[in-house]
Length: 226
Image (cartoon, rainbow, N blue to C red; front, side, top):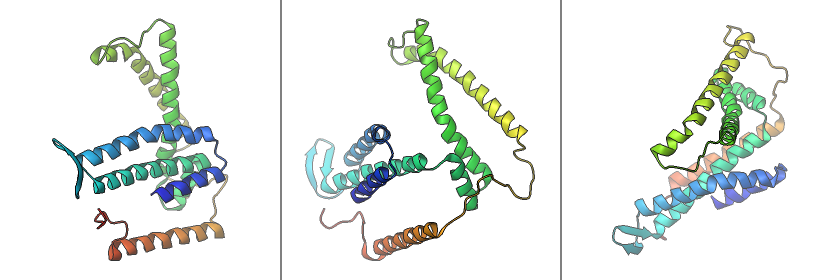
């Protein structure tokens, strides 16, 4: 997992992705990874204990598994964001369609990528506007704080519903859902020799690691060292 993490960072550098984007992804994923690792270490102890206080039992195997889980979460998040940073949403949909994925599914994925930042921007804009009108968001806890946030949630709901109606009308005007024999695109994707080469390399790597895991226990959780 650590080797994969280094490889992903090299891919970020080779793709000339700004360092600020990489730092933003790390700030988002790191707290979740640390939390998942701690939960695994505390609630899934296995192997010989090295530290025990009351009901807390920490083992070397649990620490190794928790670190592996944290690295796995980091790798998945970084790989997905790398894919989104380096590929246009239209190309993602066309690529999925080329892989025989229904076009509707690809459209849903594209809309999700497009409107998740839109929802966040709407929240920031509405929150700043409400605070400029005198709304104090720092008072209260629990249910009282939720009641303070209610004007923001209502305005966000109206904004999201209005945006969804505009998208629905735009799709309807473009004939989305009509029964056609084949859907065309202005810029069509075509697989090249490099694409086939990388696909074969990935497939061979996957089969090799699967064979090593099934027959030799490579990367298995039952490690004699622990």
